[in-house]
Amino acid sequence: MLILGGSNSQLNAVLRAKEKGHTVIVADYYEDAPGKEFSDYSVLTSTFDAQGCLAVARKYKIDGILTVGTDQPVLTCAKVADELELPFFLNVETAKAVTHKKVMKSIFAQNKIPSAQYRLLKEDFTEGELSGLKFPLVIKPLDSQGQRGVYKVSSLQEIQSLLPSVLSYSRENEILVEEFYESEEITLSGWVRDSTVHILTVTDRQTISNYPHIGICIAHNFPSKYLSAYFYEIKELTENIVQAFKIKNGPIYFQMLIGSDGIKVNEIACRIGGAYEDELIPAITRVDILDMVINHAAGQEIDYSALEEYDLKKNTNQAIVQMIFTKPGTIGTMTQMQKVLALPGAIAGRLNYHEGSVIQEIQNATQRVGYMIFQSNSSVNLRRRIAQAFETMEIRDTQGKDMLIDLIDMENN
Image (cartoon, rainbow, N blue to C red; front, side):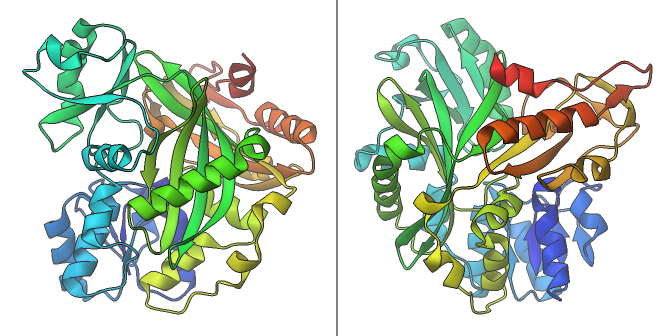
């Protein structure tokens, strides 16, 4: 089994595939990617490099390929699977559409799927190309992930200044510019079986900004506060997206925005979400979405019984995936996650860094120091439990200064 990506987002997939008896090869361009420690074989190959991953696949004579929690390797998986006639949920055309924002936005427009107004700009763009768009705007790479190279801008000069940085995260020579929509975010995780949509979770995606960086996720709250009022609209929109993009089977992860103009689709993906949904979803729905992905990649039969029995509207669970961030610095001491996992309601958690790690200023998802998932029977009790977890967790720098950011306080404000 070739797993593309060895970061903390793919670590559970590596461990589970091993538990299921598969020989695991991890491809990642970081030599110290955590998943490599647990794999049978590891290669220093970029997950964006389809030809490089194809060479790895041929070398090890793989039987299956997969990725979770990350966008761009989905296209690589589709290309390798197509070349070697291996099972994969998407063909190359659909994989390209759900990983490349230029194609994605075009399909949104063609199918009247509500989305922010946008333009495509090259480095030598003129002011006239922005005609019709209102500041503030958001600029993004066409083919990146994890909020890398995503900026909120308030002037033409800021676009010109930041455009080279955006392009540095891309393999394209143009960027996406779209109107900033004042809104709150929701994420939808689900599974498509024979073109039929099964929505598993809808969460409120809590974010922070560190201007010009925006949209940095700090928590996912289940269920979304918008679920009751918007359920049928969300469901219809999801079904329209699945039809428009010709998604026949497999996991889906859609990001939507809710503001004064209603729901707009931000981005879509055909993979398990990168906010540890592979642990959250089974805990609160009993649908083991990670097991389903691995079994499909292995060419094994998928047990759909839990998926077919599940009804989102009858799910009374309350849960949160809470990210852990710190101020910049070098970690001197930190509380072990086992202490947090001993608290009431703890489902899962992991620290992504260790004592001695140097943490940079928050810019995107890569600065997550860790995460913890808690569950309860009420939203009030859930907040108490996560507050207790933050009180239990301590992270200090080498001078003994507190590094932990109080994300609960930030969310409340």
